[in-house]
Length: 341
Image 1 (cartoon, rainbow, N blue to C red):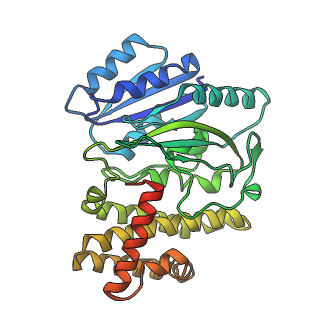
Image 2 (image 1 turned 135 degrees about the horizontal axis):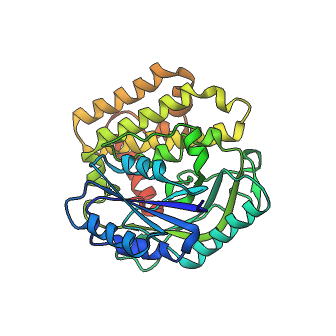
């Protein structure tokens, strides 16, 4: 059995996927690299097959019909044989020194006979054209270099969350929680780091800059114009997360810090949906914003009150054009700071 399975969802990724794969190969025989060719129409499939032929004990090429990012993550999970599971997008890569430290840490934990549900590390925004890259760290919120539970988690800053780039899950945990991301849908990485949380009993944080998250490729899903054009998919993900939280309240009873974290995550996702709908400037999308908030109210009035009258949620619902202008200006500040576009 492998220590770590790494899935690389690929769709027409021939121009950049090699950098990603090469950065992961240095993990050696303890790592299984699952290149998921999601119905590509370029040379992606051939590149995947070539790597499998060259590294048959490390690389596995998986070919499937196009189903989107979530479908590729699901396929990787279905084929994974490693104790732990990581997703690395095909236009991103990892840093070797941090990679080796993560593998060493996982080996040590297993050798001690401990069970770890989730390992967290830093990621770096590799934004095109910027010399100084922002690092997303968690040292202020999480204990370092030890296994800990939710009761030891400290305060997360607004806008800072454990993203797909940050996490490595225990493979069996993902299967036990029934994780199954929707197909033909963008932004499902939010579901990936949300639905497993009630099943996570313990964590480990390594303060290393492991994942390099590239921003700047044309047509990238986090581009603001692209996000607005795909706003219905953002809303779909938003509603899935709302439904999951409401329908699984029993799993977080008595876990106040887990509940707070999940509520804050829901708040930022709902705010992003609202901001994109506002920035589109169309009456149709403003109506969609009203319907989203009404959906939350109908689903759970207590959750609606928490989200609607929180600091960020309240700013999303200020009346009139003046209120919307304040919202957009606040969003611009967040965008410059967090660089999520």
